[in-house]
Amino acid sequence: MDGNSVGTDERSRLRRRSFLKRTGTAGVVALAGCVRFNTVTADGPAEELIQDGFEAVGIEPPFQTAIAITQDEERERFAQLLRDELNDTGFFDISIERRDFGSQVDLMLSAAEKEANAMFVASWTGGWDPSDYVDMLFHSDNWTPNGFNVGHYESEAVDEYIDAGLTETDPDERVDIYRRLQEELVADSPASFLRFRETTHVWDDAVVTDWQTYPLRTGAYYAVYAPWADAYTDLEDGSEFIGDLGSDVNNYDPVSINGTVSSQATALIYEELVGVDFDGDVRPMLATDWEQLDATTYRFMLREDVEFHNGEELTAEHVSGSFERYEGAIREGDVYDWYEDSEIVDDHTIDIECSREYGPFENALFNVPIVPKAAIDGTHELASEPMGTGPYRFVEHDSGNHWRMRRFDDHWFEGSKTVPETAPIETVTLEIITERSARQGALERGDIDFSSGVPSASLAELEKDDAYGVGRHVSGGFDMILYPAYQAPFSERSVRRGVNMLLPREETLETVYNGVGQLGYTPISPLLENYADESFQEAIADEYVRPN
View (cartoon, one colour):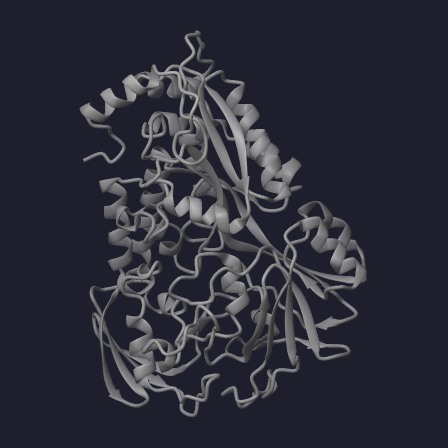
């Protein structure tokens, strides 16, 4: 069954509604398409696709809708370019709706239920496995609010590819599956992929030493102290490191964290069984070793003498309970996409049984922080105070101002040839600064030591300035447009395809992002080169995106 089709009754309802002139609101974003009886002539293959879709659902142009964005200078400029491009076709009459990050996320999670009439400018941060880039966004099991399939997109073919990729363990077969999946997604266009991001870090070179740039935005602050990845940072003088966050922290509990900033803020507080280091290699963290017992069962040996921030000692019960906390939570798929059960062998040995053969199993464990029993049994609310085994413990969150952590002196690490036993930095303060230009200003004034969000237009000049260190790395993130596939005319793939072809990618990359990043046509980042190398990207673009 094609998830993009609209039933007869629904088509009739939409057709009748399209001929009604209304002055009220539809959904929560913008007025749905009021028909104006004028003639629009399609100019070129992209507009012809849009016209076909409009005719299929009985909507006459211009269709009124909105582009919903967070309050960000770069997104604002892109939204203006996209609005002008689409309005110029005569098929659309588009406005721009601006919200703070928390309100935008809330809207996206409820958009389908409320029939919000909007396209969403959003970003997604995947990880080290191709499934991270597609499963939660496009599988029909992951519709909002319990997943991130905002448009309630459904495709039997896409679901089958995603499921096959998750169960396949042969590396070459996985590459083939995910390449075919990406082709299907671009052909169907539930989203348009604009740009693969670069992770860009800038620091005061007179203050910060030995900084390493982690490719994924969620791990921006691993470089402060990540002994499992052979990484740490020191200061030339003082004991407080001051960085920044691009928005407020809105979630502390791993089972409900739904934004990059919350992950950045808590990354030094929580730890997992394994980690993925700066080069993408899986490394032991709370587990010292593991082995595969059969196709679906793994045995993990845990570190001894690991202490949580509340004094509890890590045992296998913490691992089992931490997994089971995800059931019914917004991030349930992080665990229950593969988890079946666990068996505690002894205090520091646990067998984890998967519900199926699962290709990205080790990488998936990096998404599951282990939490204390007090959080598992409900006597401690992680939503009020995050608590883990990490090298830093939570001190305070002054909402809208800063997030502060202090070194956890009872951390388990005993030192190595490359990393000291104790984190050199005592206090980590992350100032909440929403405007990119303000983040750069704070760095230049010396108010902060480090920024992960200066304007892309400034990077070239900062790289030339000996006062600053600059780290750049292709990241696991991409910028995109999410379409409301639950609502006409975006229920028609031809409309989504046509808009995808009109997306001003090249102009946006050069004029908005000043060449920082790479053009994006498919969802999987070139960080995972086998799945998304340049030749593959170009072939997809030529076939489905660039007008002929």
